[in-house]
Length: 317
Image (spheres, rainbow, N blue to C red):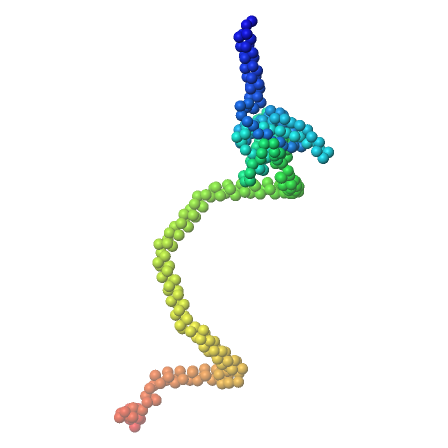
């Protein structure tokens, strides 16, 4: 084997080795041709995070987990996670490295959460704030715990309502409720059978309304006449007239009381039999006198007064 062949084989071997290293680095999310910055975060637990897991910014992969170490700090086990991030992505002060699930299979990664307001940037090698996203059970508990008290109150109220319903649903109440429903059914049937009459009544009311609307002018005039009559009655001073009538009635009552006491001539005329009898006899005598006067007027009238002679006296001579 000559020298050129050995050189070619060596070059091919180096290229293959470089490609292998680059491929492995690419699979790990590393780029050998870009410079990277390194940051550290301290966690209490990994929650499934492993080396080479991705580091994401708004869902875009900007680096990977470089190394995971354990360290005892103040008698407490801490997990030191080192990440490497492409140098084009600066980390503002206040940035948080949060362990999250990156797919539905539960693969873990680190989400970079940048603050809305910041003052300056971290340098490569700085320690950033750490946070862990809760698991599914923890997330469910986070949703349930705020409503736990409300749920307990709801269950208590529901239990009270059920007890009240059980107390109400006695045999007597059930019978009354059944009877009430039957009565409602009868009422509904009665209304259905008399629907035509009800429609007729509604139609009559509508006609009445239209009639009133058509005669609104007459109604206004009638109201005006009543108002005029009221004004006329006010002008007549009805109160004074009634007062005067009451005074007259009082006077009449006084006169009747005097008559009833029997101390006057009027009472004697009204109550004495002798007076009545005398008046009756006087009336009879007056009637006989008038009858006799009609029959024998000459007996009472002397014609000589008018220049004549009394024939009866001549005959006697």
